Image (cartoon, rainbow, N blue to C red; front, top):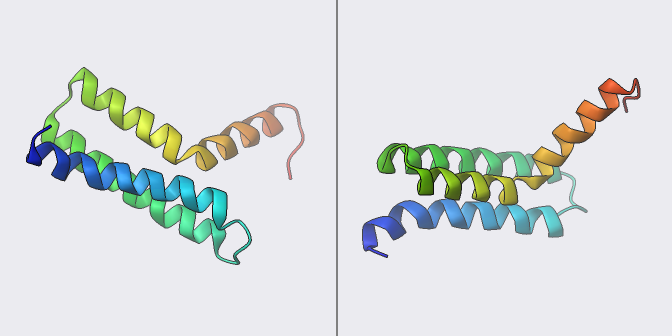
Length: 92
């Protein structure tokens, strides 16, 4: 891995890992969803920057998709639950 690849991939991977870590550890704080949202936005911006620099190739897209799914699992899970709740007529 070259230094250029580390400079583009590293911040995105760190942001995804930090989001996952915050999801597991900060659940007792008052601004839990604020932290998760800000880290998610940071991950999304870094993913867009990474894809812009590497281009639309298969491996970068796969890596970014995997990183976003793993790092932003809290958001994906929330979307799935809200979808099922709206389909079945039950909502929080």
